Length: 494
Image (cartoon, rainbow, N blue to C red; front, side, top):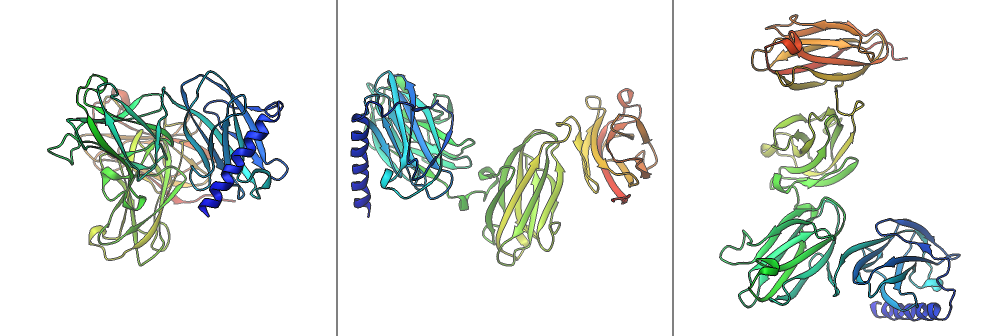
């Protein structure tokens, strides 16, 4: 089957060559293709081929990807020069059946053409929409090897040729490890992982897991942006180094099922994403991390999908200080943290576990879902929901903190602001959306705590809740507080 497909690909290449060389009009009317801009198109029996043109300088390294967006399309890519000579061709070099020319050096200044079609061209049977992307991935006088996860390649570093370049296409969330092991000479290996334009992201000279050697390794690097990355294999001192020898370079990706067993290997999760995992006696915790902006409102849901697992989910900050947790808030045994407002911009952790955590006895598969949105006032004030409890700090640097919530006419609410530390003399004030003050309290609660009890909202509105201290900016007390907004009785919901 592979041999037949190879023969068909060669026939395709020959027919491309005859088509391009045999017609002076072959490339007239080609659509423009710009570096870094994705274009879309459709391949069907009426239009099985589309031609794109771009201008490039000699020695530029380009990558071209044609990905299926719909249908059963089996993409096929061809890169030619202005005379129609084929410079590169790809059928299944990308993920699945996608086509990818991962690294091709442009031989000279001029105009070049990308032909987007399907396997078999006019004789093919697949159809569908596609996305086409042309990227510049570097410059250089020689071809650069493209690596796939699991590849192992041999190389040599000398004073005359101190740098070897490799490309890898990685997806957001991939956790990769690159190792460079000396096999001859006195080589002192050094590794860089960089963007295609040469911006170094991470480097390593001595692998901490290979004590007693000079081998290099970049371990457990979490990819934040999907795209093409550059691996530079060199020696200590880079161009100024003087060691020489051969090496073996290996590229690996940590399988998703192995991620998240420890906080330092937390798996990336984005807003809108649902990821799957397993909790058992060997792995009672799974860790995830995400970046959020102050004021973002998030909801975390952990659903049991197999076994007898009783989900328990926790939200923590970058230092693993717990901010919220839930056991059965998602209905049944499922766990859910709903409407949590992010207090500060930064990295946060999701901890998926089970009831009684490491001492628990349930096990099984689960799905963890993270949803989030920006706050309604862009982070200037934090949103607070009915039934929510939040904490904060009042001092001379931050004498006032604001929260907003949506209420309806006739809602009966209670607001409490309790001192958690220091000598804070709490003050809570309620405003409508025009910032007209409608209620406040200073010492209705115990120990100088503020308590606004059973207040009826006058209209449907967005309300502003201000947590502060007696005399606000002029006050002298300070400390941590706990603020709770409670819906005592709902108003008219018609």
